Amino acid sequence: MNPPYSKPYLLNETEIKYVATCYPLPDRPGLCECEEWKKKLRQHLNSNNKTFEISSSEIRIPFPFLAKFINDGFFEKRSFQNYFEDTDELSHNEDNYQFILQIFNGKDLSKLSQEPKNALLKVLEHVLGCTIRIYDRVENKEWNLFGCIDNPKIDFNHFANSIKNTGNYYFLHGKSETGSIVIREINQTEFLKYKSWLDSKIKLKNENPFVKYRADLEKLLFQN
Picture 1 (cartoon, rainbow, N blue to C red):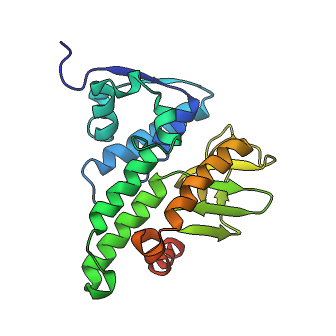
Picture 2 (cartoon, one colour):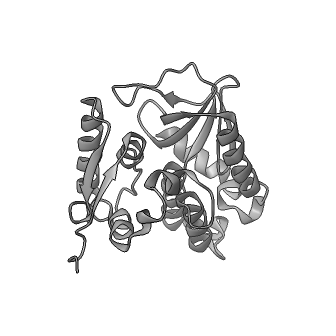
């Protein structure tokens, strides 16, 4: 039997980018280790390496959920990339959305004092950054869980092997000082599938905390 947190997993180039653009809460345990690993993975990619083998024992502090999934054999049934990019009930994106519904269940930000309100908005910002967004370069629009952003700030050059901004559609994840980080170019089918999932959440309006508190969230997003 393997001891706790001991299984390896080989990340491909796209998977490395998702881990390297993790968008953690500012007060989470293991934050320093998380930021160190993000920098390490980014440097690894920037050295023109396309894969990286991680051990769940190494990442149990910076990325505890990823370590648990590796140990539980979750990625033996589906790839890490598929888990991150899909929208089914066991996907990372749907997990994020359901997590927010649980956090905001029965809460009304307008009735809270400033400190707990800000804390909840920070959680919204965190989950938004950790959930895939999509970008249409021709229309210059970004779609996320609260709707559409016109003329968004987009970071095509976060990684040394930067993605050419000549395609039509892209997956975004995380955030840099330049803007939303481009992970990879996608085709129209992928774009429309993901947009359909986002639209299904956006239509929920008052049931969706991202839409309900969009004005407050945008103030937080665009002041950073």
